[in-house]
Image (tube, rainbow over all chains, first blue to last red; front, side, top):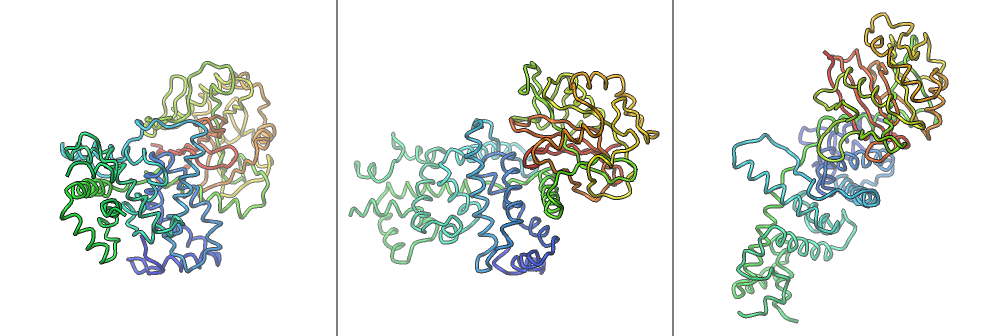
Length: 208
Length: 294
């Protein structure tokens, strides 16, 4: 993802420059923004919603929304942060609406194929990745959002806090809770020789 | 305050390098003495590693195309006066994007199992006896599918199957039904400019049945009126390539009111067929697939 205001790796215009051009009426500038951010928006939407159809719908909503909203974009913000925030919010809205219609069975959510199929190791890896993806889908949306932004989008706590418009302390505790939940779902906590999965500080006081 | 509790709560932040030097030192000192926290840290680290190892999903080519088309349409819609514009490709008229909507069993008491596109799993359109997927999508399969729906549709579903050959010079939107000419929307399938289109003839025998099934008028004006009646249907081209409408109808896609459209893009290199499903009210692209025509 492009850095703040910095030129893209190919030496082209910065994100802010593209927004400025778009505001001035250059439609192609917006197409360039779509090209730059499409995959990132799709990836976040996919991990938040859990399936490709919703990811596609959310991506469209995000960019159609951006056509209006970027006209009022203030340049002290990073465009990537803006897209992160809008995509997470659009994903949450989309999932809320979907809940009112029908629920997608979690078991139908498959890991999306991204690279070529390889030998047997790759098959096992893909199966595990599907498990991780399913576990992510089982988190609450708040927990999932912080994990997606931090672990998958490589935002630090401060950046994630800005994107989600929450305090850094909230990011910190949500990531911790989210990871504990994931660790249980993925079996990492169970492997510790405890009969019960770790709940938190309480079990630590037993024995030892 | 129990230092054990506090240290445990810090473990993720410690893992992520988000603690201050002082906090980091305190956690490390604690980890040296607490096997449980050390194990917890291992579990958290393993978890973080697995999450980070997830590869970025890649939007399919269809998804990308649908996104760009949605942007292009929104842009043109913003540039046009906000009125419903409908056009059938005809001589002197520009090509048009018509969305087809399938009337699925939800519309009436029909027992047909037809479901438009996948609920989960298969990427494709299904109907009576025909499965259209992106692999086999071609004009013939699309026509069969649409015809099947036309024959099976209940009253209340709009169904109109038309073949509109259109030697149109330029793209753009056309106003009203004045753009329809040369009997382009006759049910018999024969049109004024149909010399070079053999396929419509094949539709001729079934077309009257389609008309009977829909029970609605079939002239161009009733067509455009029907479309105009449907909320804010704005039908605008998404590409500068000439578009030839093959057929369209209303339907439901994943329980949403939608339009389904099939049209040809003969000038594209290679020429292709496109299948669109647009949300009937927002015109958002719900499904898209395309196929090069041999």
